[in-house]
Image 1 (cartoon, rainbow, N blue to C red):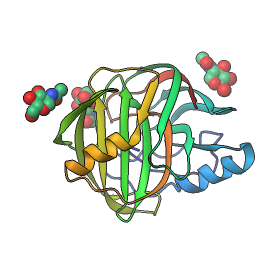
Image 2 (tube, rainbow, N blue to C red; image 1 turned 45 degrees about the horizontal axis):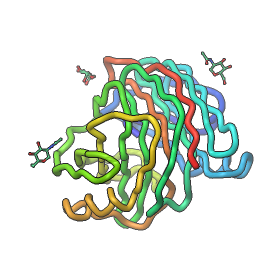
Image 3 (cartoon, rainbow, N blue to C red; image 1 turned 120 degrees about the vertical axis):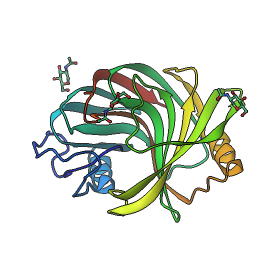
Image 4 (cartoon, protein in one colour; image 1 turned 45 degrees about the vertical axis):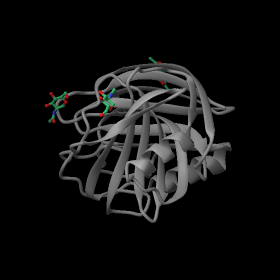
Length: 227
Ligand SMILES: *[C@@H]1O[C@H](CO)[C@@H](O)[C@H](O)[C@H]1NC(C)=O
Ligand SMILES: *[C@@H]1O[C@H](CO)[C@@H](O)[C@H](O)[C@H]1NC(C)=O
Ligand SMILES: *[C@@H]1O[C@H](CO)[C@@H](O)[C@H](O)[C@H]1NC(C)=O
């Protein structure tokens, strides 16, 4: 998640809040709580959280499918998706549609603990506009495609363990696609070779994320099924 300033109480409603600049964030969202609430209610691992102003409508449809439509305001953002808990080595097959404008990603998104790492395997996007500078760590090509690798650092930012300082790992596909198979272990291996060490897997989802980077606003629709 790129910037989080606010709360997680009402997941299915967008809660208005004061805009906090992306790099001056204060309170945290407990994504884990959000995921669990929805998991208990609807079955399957589903996570959806949002912050700030905008209209973010995401719904779990069952059978690994979710749909979103969104139109963000300055300071607003969201991440939603279906997937697995725990995450880890899997061939994640997904299909659907993703039509986005502005900053955001369609990505396989996950967390590990010890060390605390937030990671993305980005399949498609309109504008990347990362919140922190990315350090390039190389690239790798295998039968599923070519991905460029990056890391970035988040300092005192919300995480699944509360406000923490942690590293983000990124695989960014050079040829965007919407649909296919992501063999996560290939990315984990490539990251390991680049000195990017993961911890123990928490959840991972095939997410739709949209956020405002302070200038540009996100909007779009997605309908994604993970099998
Ligand atoms: C966006 O999602 C909401 C809630 O699911 C729905 O009522 C609305 O029709 C959707 N709008 C578009 C443009 O898809
Ligand atoms: C991948 O890395 C090689 C070696 O550093 C470089 O020549 C090539 O341009 C890179 N390709 C991409 C797509 O980044
Ligand atoms: C948002 O992203 C755009 C495109 O990368 C960039 O031109 C703009 O400066 C960014 N805004 C901020 C506040 O970083």
